[in-house]
Image (cartoon, rainbow, N blue to C red; front, side, top):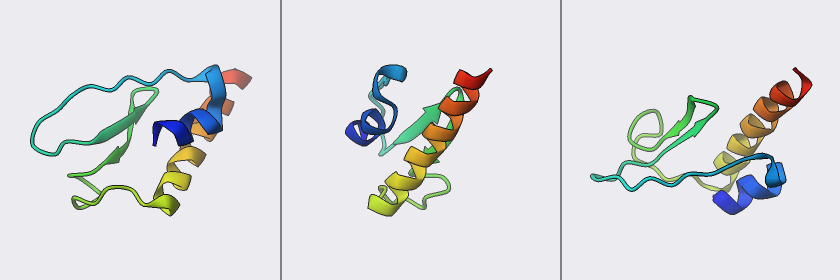
Length: 68
């Protein structure tokens, strides 16, 4: 998934991976949670269509930040 995010945003993003326990897998963008495997995603890892949706969220957030 990190590769997809870099493909979308290039060097304009930084990715931090923090180890967790108990199957925790969350993605935050600019402080906002955009993905939570054990929350809204019902324990399911993202498939390709979901990753594309997350890429779009990152693209939108980045465009807002760079246009300000």
